[in-house]
Length: 272
Image 1 (tube, helix red, strand yellow):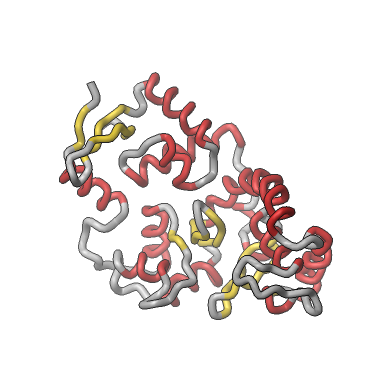
Image 2 (cartoon, one colour):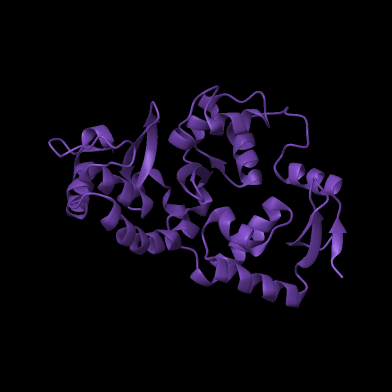
């Protein structure tokens, strides 16, 4: 019979794993800020700025000495953090770049299939042109490319071919965000942004185990779907297979988690 995690305990566990159960005091610069981001996994980036940008609010709510310049220093000078995608645009510890090498390869195929339907034709023809320009001229942003190309009026996703090419090269790991100006991404060649020690791909056979173990550690309890979605680094089928094998080995246990209204749902957690 699965053990029950009562709602008060589930709430405390969830808040603790997300660094919200303690007073929001302490250092928020350098290694201390990096350790906080490593503890919560990643920080989602958001362009909306009603009170403050989402990533700044996430960090300030945990360390009220935090200032946005602290994060920029780690991203743009120290290069101990980098920007890419989990389930959304995120800031991650740079040591995860080797894991993302496998996602780059996966996304290259998936994005080609989708973007050929969604965006204007011609973006693939811009790949080499843009890479050569960045190599020759240095970092570029969307405003620096696509001069003379047809630009639509359909909003964020009505991209001209060179903008689409920039995003594709970033999503597939060939270029990286070196800084932001305002909130616009400025890209450079990956080898100029990501330290060499972090650029090599980790062994593929370890990615699923890392993704599931680390996600469960960050969440406290989770379903296979939630483990897959946390980093968005592995398919749901791989997460389900890992959960079955980990259960059989006794490395995780099944529990029932009580929700705020008393409803229960099954999840997995590490043994106490």
